[in-house]
Image (tube, rainbow over all chains, first blue to last red; front, side):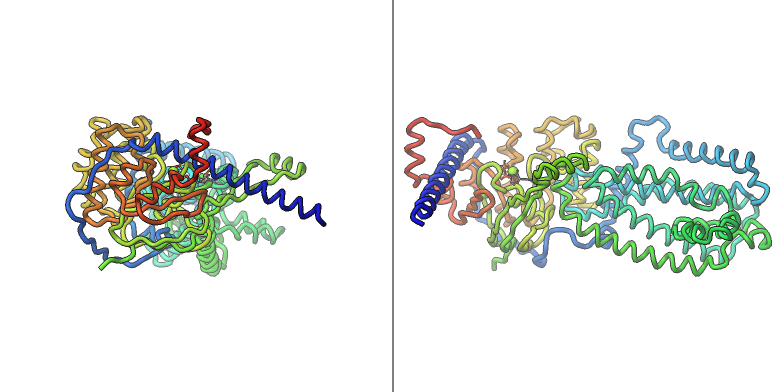
Length: 341
Length: 259
Ligand SMILES: Nc1ncnc2c1ncn2[C@@H]1O[C@H](COP(=O)(O)OP(=O)(O)OP(=O)(O)O)[C@@H](O)[C@H]1O
Ligand SMILES: [Mg+2]
């Protein structure tokens, strides 16, 4: 008992000595720092009396909380980030923006040659080139949004570390950049459609709008989620780049819907799995807008699922929920960004 | 009528120090029973209120949490506990250098930073020449900022921040890299905005300039706010003048590690 007491007293004394030592060390450091730095900054005195400044604002939490909504309130900043990002992408390149067409164009030629000519899908799918190109344009938009978004926070880390910005602005900027690259492709698509006898239908337009809405919600949800995850583990950018390589094969563009429908007869679960992908649904809706009106109804009657619209609306609802969840997830992680970058 | 400009209410900020990044490292560490991560409290239960127009000197040793506190006030980081409220536009520079995009030119960064700090397009255009004049970086305006000297980097950052017409201005030790004439110009400019009633947070180890610039001093010691009050007393407190033992130790010529 007494021994224990003794030990405790000794420990307390030791702690006191340690504490005093620590404080003495700190004091020494402080004093030396002060001595060394005392005159390191020039002295400029205040001239004249201070004025009263009336700040016409509420007391608010300084950190950004508005999420995507705040991004769209700061459109000027968004525009600056997008234009700078575009300028930066082509800063040291002779062909510049042309590069974002050369690659898709080559890929188109290869796919068309392999599937259209060698495998002869060209025969069973009328206007196969248009069928293929519609899919490629929107898959391209999707992959660019997703992979660009995934890298976006990390690429802009100098800003995220020092400045107060709604961080969702970087994934959103990637989406705008992707749209900027896809725009001219859509124009080419439009011209091709016109040449092949496209005509306007309200149904087609509705399908296009629905498809685009699904695409935007889905790509934004993924891009928000992965941009946040990528701050913590760089593995996610590799996951995305691996995955995007397969996407072309997972949507009905090199082959038409009827192939999948035939597969569905033997493997119903594979069919369901295939169409659980919002991208596949969105691509079909876009084909309903661009490709179908160039044909006679009898030609495309079997090239869309009977429940195209029901699936479309359900998918949009699912993607909207995913977007809300992704925003929540992003907001929870973003507080840790500055210390992890 | 004075009004609160900054309210800091029982604020704490923890950092997680992750020791192992790959799965293999984590597995090895778990087997050996080593900690995977550790929490470190950089700002510990700090509370204070600043009135509009006050000029605060924030002092403390290296690593005492000054920059972290400024990041919390400016909204870059969020406190883990407690809450922070601010009124009006905040500008300033935190921990050596502005938030610049290294590959972009000085001009692009100027626009980008201005917009992030809340300036509108016409406002930036109007102040553009003034900012460039103040930064005095000459023909380097259109070269990427990664090619700037650290002094030029700081000049441009300071020039933008000070021209934002903010209600709260935060100045971390960014000016440490500037040369004497530029430092002088910056201090004069800061006095000017101080006179206009801007709330200023000035981090510095230079007691004479804190004396000239500030109305009040806060001293942080390993995350704790241990002093809040008059400038002279704050500087006195930091020098531990009342601590007899330090004096003795110093008299012995037994000097500690360099800082
Ligand atoms: N991202 C981070 N992760 C882990 N620890 C961090 C991080 N940022 C800062 N710290 C730690 O927090 C403490 C406070 O750092 P801070 O930069 O606020 O100090 P400071 O008072 O500004 O110092 P100085 O006078 O050197 O500028 C330090 O011990 C630092 O190591
Ligand atoms: Mg610091």
